Length: 303
Image (cartoon, rainbow, N blue to C red):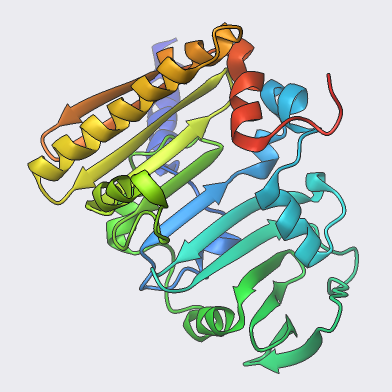
């Protein structure tokens, strides 16, 4: 018995040492990772295929308008959400591109029919659009949409990197692999446009964030975390107080005849650690429909 046990144990140890370790953090499909330029300061991803398998998607999202998915589908001619596997938003703080990985065609090339658009080549790849905006055909399963100049810049940098810059990769390690939605940033304004009215002060506070991340896990309820690392402890205190103030205001103005709206704010908790502000989100599944009504509007067909 001992004669067989020792060789088996040795074989198991050898196989264990040869297997690839599980890398923590947000994952990006290799088909998209190689397109991330070195000057990227913000990445945001949606694992559409994994999201569509959750009960929350099937019960609450499948029949609801989703602007990000629907706009990308309209621009690329995609007819079924099920054919979209992953979305990746890339920004350098000045220009941005949205990449999609999915089944865009049964043939060698997607048939893009955009009114008034023209087809033109750039360094061996095809774009469909005009001088302002276009769709970039990277491969039969990878398309990009955005400003034409940004898409050309993406092509210029294609193959020069093998994934996110080191600073972004470090932030991404703090994001669970299971997160359906995630974002990581290491520079540039968090809100790239001025907020109106009294929200102007919040705009200033938000833009004191030097780096951050956020994610949502929809496997059971709406669970997530948003982290902002500010330039100073004073900025972090201001951000902490501003977020808590907004939560308190939301709870105060929630209609008394809709108690579920008030319960939403009970699932949001804000903590402060030196220059870091954490917003914890933990909403039960029974409140998901209420949360989504606020964020995305009501379903196409009433339940």
